[in-house]
Image 1: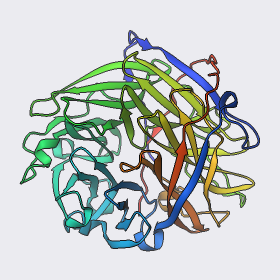
Image 2: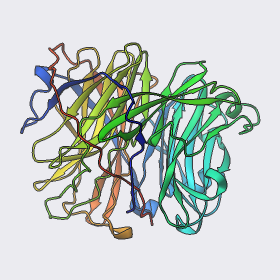
Image 3: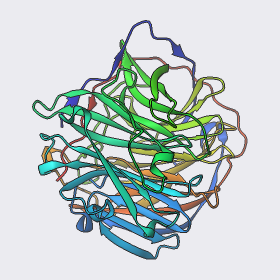
Length: 479
């Protein structure tokens, strides 16, 4: 696993206010923040793809829900189910992306209610190696039904001389936006992060096109793993982009804006920086069998979502002895970030994802494991209105206690989970999560939960210190 340094900004950078909401840190899965409670029910649950079907490690799982369909994209395989769990189709990932040859990786998919289209992204891995320049893929459905086929377009990685890794995907009324981390094909060193903004109208035209795409190559205006914010509203001319980095020795979230994103000639400017909680690299989570696995890093690995004035995003943070999940709500009206910390005594938590509805209810999903706990899929329900969270709930527990599958010299896991609100009934959320099927194979599970807004509770306001950001690591090692 290669190492890259976090993006560094000038010492004169201004930090915007951050509030820390009380965290769930009890030894038992009891009451949440400041006595706040949440009620939820698993409405249904069915199995997703497995490593036996995929053929790759890790799954790099993306998922989306809309119009009665659940679409799951994994390394190697694409599956469409009904929302009742009946499989409609299953193809190779290559077939899904129009029959393109060679290895593909890092697939993501988003259903956009405003355009009634499905948008997907991935990268090529020529020769199965990051030592060759690659391409970024973007696909758009023919209509509202994902079984009606997709049109796939591609463009070369930055300067056609780098390997673009970890493509992120965001969709709003203005554009479809993809971010990448770029690496030298000769030295494998991190070169910077790039951003590609494509007017949504160009992709939803009768003949989809990239002609009006704006590219920002290895720009200092974003940090590592830039993630465009998804917003289901119509119209608009700009896109908000989030990323992680450092200023001096302080870990920060970077907020940037693509202006004029709905047309050719868009511009990108860096905005506010918000301090993170911790800088430490995640510790390697353990399992009852004693084998550790890859915890990932502190990047915003899964989608960021905006509802109203609030932008929701999550990432892994570490105190140096325990991995936890930070959830964040950026209020675009007040330009402040409220942060909550999810922790469970004795467990390391990794690979968080988040989504929210218009009532301010948001759900955070993540993995957790420890010396007496198999890798387990959890979720937690919170309210942006009260700042209260319920206790972590178990969605699924791995039957295997000592997962070990180590391509590239590391026991790969993740690289991300996915959470999305149900566009038909926003009180319901869908979780796409990984588990250890056996000690040498992974599985995935798709869970629909119903939510209720947590009861009002006082918000615990806590102070915190700031320290420098640890190195962010290159996500490699696919087989």
